Length: 348
Image (cartoon, rainbow, N blue to C red; front, side, top):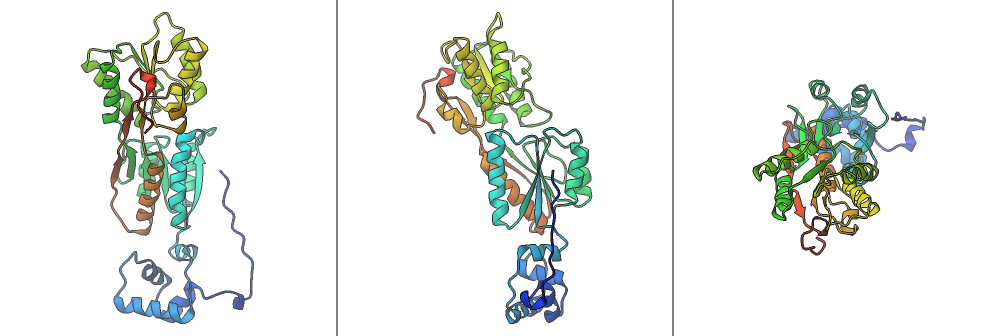
């Protein structure tokens, strides 16, 4: 993670427009009061607000978000912590986050766990350089999250179990995992493999717990999830191992679409037909899932909306528009396509 650097250059005052400090002097109030009056984020008496607006008009002051943030002792920057940055899922979440952050006038500092052994310390250091943090998954211990909250850092968690005092934005997992498992059971599949393990108490863990319960209700014992990297390559390697067993599963439920695409490649490589010899399902509904051959049955989740909601929630906490933590769960949807042996539907 590279540190932000700020360079300043001395310029004669007459080349600058009026500052928030001059507005404060003209109105006879503090710069914090000017900031609250302009942003509407805190209590300001009507008469005081009028004085501030009059000073703004007289000085022809145009507030910049950076200037207002600095006046409030803030950085005009957010931090977001990812387990990894590779793959379409993380890319979509980040796009949604950055789009909203840009609209709000905030820069974004991104920290990835990949290749780092000291992520807890790195997150603590990042928290001192930003106004608030979004933390994806369970890559930061609950104790560290609680420590940041206690220190006054606004925190929004993405796709993980909740922590008291932090916002949580997550996709619904349990209901859609049940629907997916019931769909496979309804088509006669009884020997089902689960591919991809959770890293802890994250959304993948919720999916497998729900799928396993549903299979058990129908008399089908779900085996432990097969560990592998959550990539196409990871799915290819694990898929080869699964499909070379003496007893090949009838269906493979994958933790995400990238794994499922890897299993499709493994099946093709080994001369197996999907769905005739094997059913394959994924999760996320990335673009490649729709154009795979056969098209992939999966669960659609609003990846970009996850990032957008997280950015909005964090801004609310930073500005004081909201002072209590809340939890948001975004709906997901089973999308049935040809890879599970069902009648293929038109792309949705």
